[in-house]
Image (tube, rainbow over all chains, first blue to last red; front, top):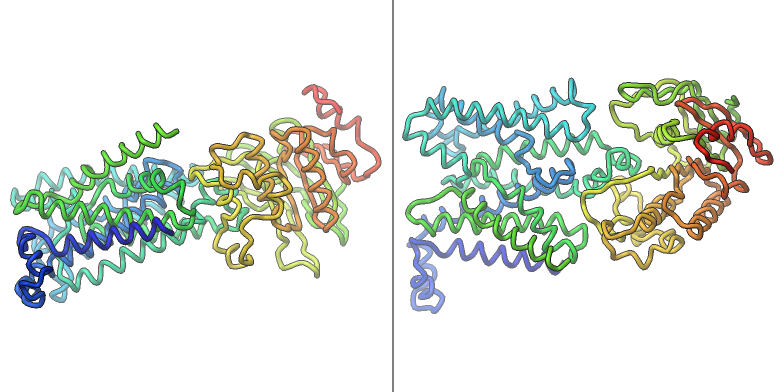
Length: 338
Length: 243
């Protein structure tokens, strides 16, 4: 419980830091407000647009991190594979490919909005995820069922491979201007969404994450084998269905929010397992994991906005840069401790 | 071969067969297990003992397919579904839980049914698991892991206990504890079906001996007094396993 509180406080402070500071509002200005020499209200009004933009970034970063880390943990438990993450199912690759295909046929999608609020690319993003899920389910049912849980990873591998090939073909056909924009997006970049669009995406991502956290006990029982789980009254088919549906919503909404952000789902579960595994109660572990994911993406988003300003490097670059050495350090330390 | 179905039958199998995806694992098995009895399933490696228990536990996953009759009968005193507990022969795990977490791990269905404060079953004390509660599963020895699994399987007051080689990795003292625990469960009305290789220690408890070979039931001896020596010898002679 103490660890959950600590991480939640850390996340709140990081969100406040990310909201308040940045190139547009230097620390000297913030300090003046805190010391009372400038009225907080004036400071807020003067920078309203900047704050709104940052609020969108912070909210999306929290939700993306929360969802991807939960998805990663769920997939690692389900597939009993430490290399799994939410992307292994191929659902996000399907979603990303569908968005890029839509750019080829409807170039106006890149800058158009539905009802003036929702970006048009959301349609192909969700359709792509649904289509990938249908393919996944069809292949699983018809041919690969006997392979057990590994079949999901295998089919995901196929979907991922086809999508990667499709991306290369699409890249070759895009205009150079569109290409640079799209390349950053495929590495994971939190886009400048409106506050309303953010308010629609965040509940989807957090909802999918919470659903996966609720499956945690069943997935742990499943990690002892489907037969054991079945004897323990886990409805294996239902758990699989909920897992895939949650992952579909998770993939489509994170792709809409930030393209495909890598490493969060892969690395954060290992980090929490090694860092908090010994102390935390089993019930708290999936929550710790999700909050740690949110912390990572908020820090990565803050770094991408400030470190190379005015140029914004994709968030995915920083999640990889931040998470890999940190995980390595934790692994080396826990190895030494043993 | 006996397959008489009477009022006190808990599990009945009639011409039951099991297809394992590429071969028949059980062929034409008929058996009825009486309520409150202790039934031992004997047989060499690959005879189909584990598959029989899995089928009774109702945990078979694709590509397994079952044919014929398999019924578990509830009577008026029991709930709609007989509560059963299945101890698989081996169990792998990916998430490294502590023993306490493993014992408390419940699916959503179980969470709805259980009473608060049921985290560590009474059987944990019976099998000497209390000192191990805060150990990680990966840090347990083979015998300790088996005792933890037994504490979980026998912790619930199940009507039907299906135990696949429950004495594996246990030393003589813990095996004694195991047989005593099973005798106690039976006195409370539980029915026990056990797959075994070692037959020296359970003689007094047993109501029914079944012998299996190549997925077929080769004998079912229902009399408690006589140990089917000749039949068991036939089954185990080549494998060098005697009483």
